[in-house]
Image (cartoon, rainbow, N blue to C red; front, side, top):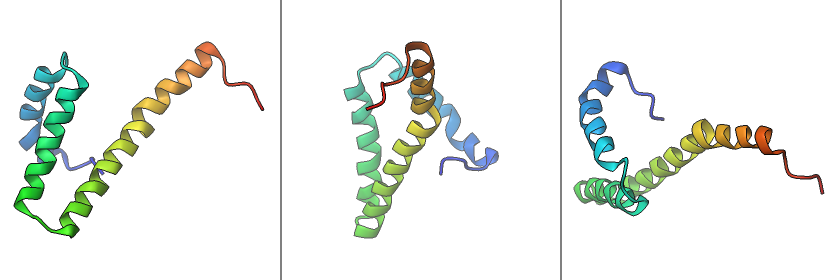
Length: 88
C-alpha cells in the first residue's frame, strides 16, 4: 500500500519529482529500465527468496493500485463517451 505517512513522504518526494521530470518525455522502455534498476538493486542488498517474493508482491500491488485508481476510471469515462460493449 503506497499510503505512507505524510512526514515519511517528505524524504522521497523531492527526488521522485526530479525523476518524474526526467521521465515524462521518455519511452516506456526507459521507465522500465529505471524501475528495474531500483528493484534489482534492492534485491542485491537482500538476496533471499522471502525478500524477492515480497518485491514481486509489491510490484503486483503497484500494478493493481494503478489500474484500480487511474486506468479503470479512464475506461469508465470512455464507456460513457463511446458506449459500452454490446451484450452477448
